[in-house]
Length: 386
Image 1 (cartoon, rainbow, N blue to C red):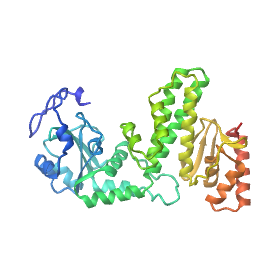
Image 2 (image 1 turned 120 degrees about the horizontal axis):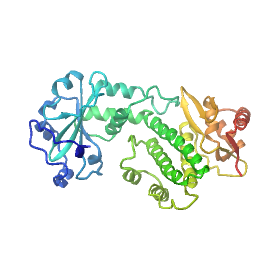
Image 3 (image 1 turned 30 degrees about the vertical axis):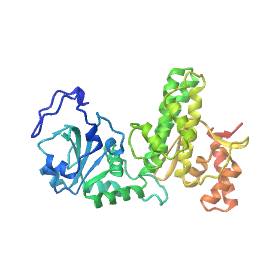
Image 4 (image 1 turned 180 degrees about the vertical axis):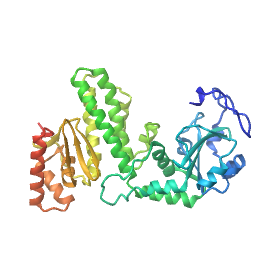
């Protein structure tokens, strides 16, 4: 965006170079500024509860076009008084420290462009408090963080403190112990299932070019769901190559993901549906983790129960909603059974897993599964694998 804007009036500091001709900042990237550097440039920030750096430069992924992301955590009165005159507010209408708890400004530091975000400690603690610990039963989210709030959680989780180390460490601990990663993973899964539904329809209608493009979108959502579940709280696809390289996954799986993202085989007629099935498998794995299923090594067979491709699933107030032409709503047990309709479990194996993971007797589990599958088949949502 900066390249498209007219030149800024520069307040209380040296002129900023023309953004189309960036300075050589390799040394600045190698040696990021410390607290004293920040306070020398912006003395108004002394006394904040915490000042930390975050973003691509901290991750080691940045380049000479990267911004330095500075986060300032303080009380409202402090922020109202000390937003430096040497920075320019971005002017977004939603930036109200009283109403929304944050202000984003633009500045510069040590030859780098700087985004300076001001957040209240009260807002952050309230946001983290809406998430239950991950070791409690997953019953759905109480609130919906905004994009900016999700990005903040991501930046907090990877931040490098310049001051307020204890404050930042405690918030990192709370975020790691919360269910935010689960919530974000399920959001990506739900979005991906909507894309998968589009993909199936496009391919069936012969709109192959649209299906090819939708296949990549769907698989990208699947990858982000996996990364989120494992603690990567990033709210978008940026830096996906670096994030995949860092993820603890099998190299063959990583190579396959890269081939799909770069669409190397998309000229093959069956490529969109091959990608669809691979993404579908990832969504099922995420769903099974969410409902508490422990991997059991079951494999596809002639009697395995398979849900129909493209059926969307999400959670609301602790229940599972299966969204197709008609919607079905079920509770914890039904949601667990639905998650195991993955083409790898037979009816008997689903009952065995249900008894193990939800502590039911074998007889009760078998009866629950039989009843659930009758309803699912009657609604055209599952069938037996070929």
